[in-house]
Image: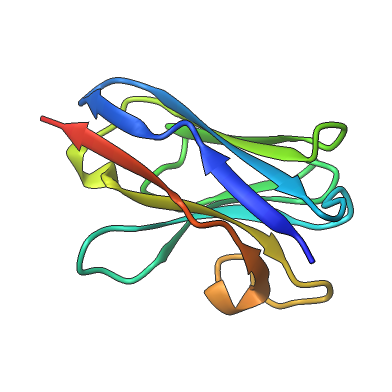
Length: 125
């Protein structure tokens, strides 16, 4: 079992930055791909970014490409999401997730086995 705790969310003005962290416990996640998803009120949860187990490859949703950066520190069992140039449309609850071993496409919710409870990000205009 893996327990994930997100932190770093908050209220920020448009154009500002936030850095989210996701700390894993219970089992190492160094051998698992990980990702960030987000869910805005009234909308489905959507893919934001993913990173392979060794951090060598990253994937981003088109809406956040070149604005957000996903990274990880396997020694700390932690994954990060640096968010720059935030927009009001980035307002959502952000979740980190651990991908199932041998699972399918990286941007599908069904490919992920463990989820955190989320951290709220609110961007004011």
